[in-house]
Image 1 (cartoon, rainbow, N blue to C red):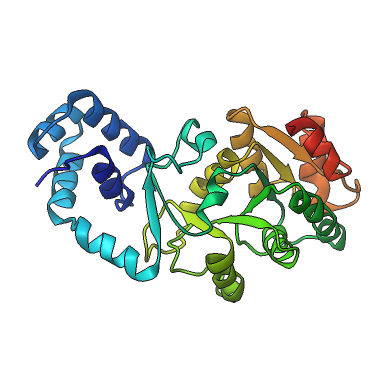
Image 2 (cartoon, rainbow, N blue to C red):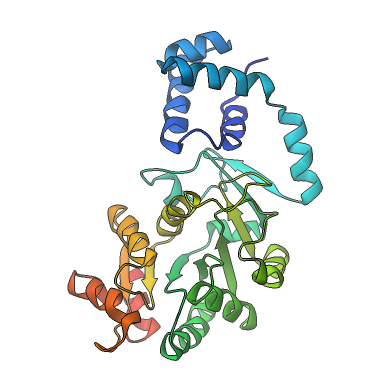
Length: 288
């Protein structure tokens, strides 16, 4: 049986980790343009290398959509395609949007005003204090704080939002039923119930190294702007900022001491044109 709707194709593609997202988007374009009704017609129009054709045919034949939907239902996880009304507009309009999103929690946060906040995994007391001072203002304005669940600034963002009864989205580089790092299990459980956790990866997907650059592009594309609190010279946070810049988003950087290794990256961003921020009001002056 072939895919009866574009959503059913997106659901299938969302479960195929051996296919790049760019190829998934290409396959979607083929489906939408030619409206194939059989697997063979779909494969023929896609003009894929022989090995990839065989791999795709096997994956289609082995895929049990009903079983995957049942697994999501058991876990209380929802999935939406790129074409669903709940899919965030900013992410949909980005260069490389996921064909679908798995999520659990407050779905309304998907449509709220969002600010991504990232930083080093080894923050100084200064970086932690910056987060603690910024979050209350974000909460008061009813914005959604977007971050990951990595150690350091990201975890500080999520725990502070929870403490302030604010709104937060955590973007994972694994399935929603996988906790990474494991010591963050209690925070992740809280967010699954009280906030919103999302991923482009299906249930059971482990935190592979290649997942995190892909996760970073979601962090950068999901929000109106990205705020970098502290970052070393070669921090992954700078990659997130680069993604955001490519998408035309605002970049904000917290300045730091010239003697601090954790401020080398943020100071460099400011030299390159990022908005220097001293208070959260500096952020909202640009975004509102």
